[in-house]
Each structure stands twice: as structure tokens, then as C-alpha cells.
Image 1 (tube, rainbow, N blue to C red):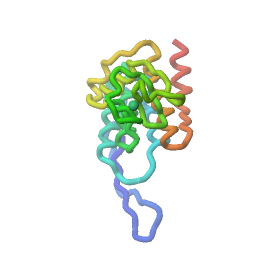
Image 2 (cartoon, rainbow, N blue to C red; image 1 turned 120 degrees about the horizontal axis):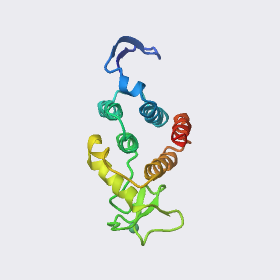
Image 3 (cartoon, helix red, strand yellow; image 1 turned 135 degrees about the vertical axis):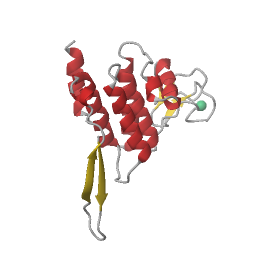
Length: 196
Ligand SMILES: [Zn+2]
């Protein structure tokens, strides 16, 4: 992770780097293929979903928090999914998990999800475009919203649950950002997991 200072002269379109300092080499990540590929996937997600060039301190702290947790070792999936959930919120694409996205009521125990309308829908509003998702994903998203990464890292889902969570967030982001999010690191991660 590098701290870089940029300056831009009036009328120019390119920045000039005036200073760069390494904050952390993250050796534990670079020496562990699992930690490394999860880090690549998180960073690649940010590269695909964040636009603009303004510095953002909350985003900087989030990236550092995610990498710090990856450097501390497994488990990686809860931190990855929570990091993505937090990044979506910081970039203005929060998923709604507390109120029905169609009528605004308390969705109670509903596990109906509608990416297009922005998240959870109550049982009376559920219709063609909503899908039933595991209740555990909603519980996880709520916890992620209110907890630090080091608290989230100990949350367990069923086998394959975090991958479902990741796919849910990817579909959500694709709908709202109106773009396909292709992630090369995901294929590497799958190959690594299938090799076990
Ligand atoms: Zn409703």
C-alpha cells in the first residue's frame, strides 16, 4: 500500500507524482496464495466499480482495514464480502436491508430480494422480478453494515454461502452501475479452491 502525492498544473490534464511512500508491504499477503488472490479480487472489484479521482479517506481506511485482515490470515471470504458491502455503501450504492424497497414497510422475516428496486422487499410487494434468497445473507449484510471488519471475520455461513453473497452483490452492482463487472481474479480464486 502506497501513499502518493499528486499535483496538477492549471490547464493540464495529467497529474504529476511528487512524492510516494510505502505504507505497508503486506509480506504475509504476498507469501500466502489464498490471501493474495482474495486481495487481488477486492482491489479488482474497486477498480471496476469506483469512478472519479477525488481522494476519499473513508475508502482509504476501508482498503487498509481489508488488507490488514487478509494479512492476519484466514478466513478471507467474510472480510471480502463485508469489504465489498462497505465499499458499495461508501460509493453511494447501499443495499437496502431494513425497509421494503417498494412500500417502505418493515419487511419482517421476508427473504425476497429485488436488485432493481434496491434490496429487500416485503412479502406483499414480492413479484416477478424479486427472488427468494437465503435469510442468512440478509442477516450477514445487516451485521456487516453495523460491525467492524475484525468482528465480521468470525461470522460463519454455510458452505458456499459467501460465494452466494458475493454473486448477489455483483448482480446488484451490475444493475445499478449499468455495467458488467468482469473479474479476472475470480477465475484464479475458483481454480485455487477447486484444487483443494
Ligand atoms: Zn413492501
